[in-house]
Amino acid sequence: GQAGALSRAGGRLNSQPVRAQSHLLIVGDPGTGKSQFLRFAAKLSARSVLTTGVGTTSAGLTCSAVRDGGEWTLEAGALVLADRGVCCIDEFSSIREADRATIHEAMEQQTLSVAKAGLVCKLNARCSVIAVTNPKGVYDPSEDISVNTAIASPLLSRFDVVLVLLDTSNKARPWGGRGGGGGAGQWA
Image 1 (cartoon, helix red, strand yellow):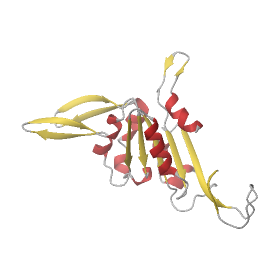
Image 2 (image 1 turned 180 degrees about the vertical axis):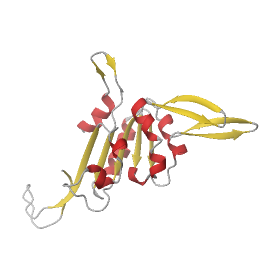
Image 3 (image 1 turned 90 degrees about the vertical axis):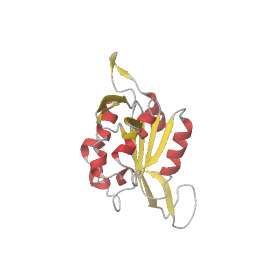
Image 4 (image 1 turned 135 degrees about the vertical axis):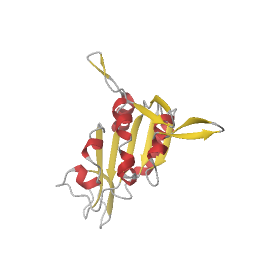
């Protein structure tokens, strides 16, 4: 709802240009609808890329150099393809640590500096990033978000909004239901 709208709004501060795209991270227990939220967010945007962190490399997120005949060309990755749109990344914490480092510039500067196969350029990556991940083990509210997700603080700091969705068990449901069961999607 509001967090998704915020990530699409952007803005300026006292007429000084600031990063126009907001980034959203949703940390939630399995079964809280994170992947469905991503698919819906991708459908709402005129330009979107939906990818998963499982098996994703830095080249898949940024760009890769490909030999075409005798010449090298660059093939855009998810963040470049999503320029002026939204890049939705499922299973964000599954991206290998070395590959996560390539996301920093794109999220903060909205560009990607490339020096591959003799090609040196700067590519635009002016997109909002909406990423979702499961906590590492059972979410512990007394611990820092970086401990709960195993995502380093420098990368976490690039997210403007971090939402935590916990699946808690309620014996007495507020809407009058009886018995145990999960309250999937409750806000923490």
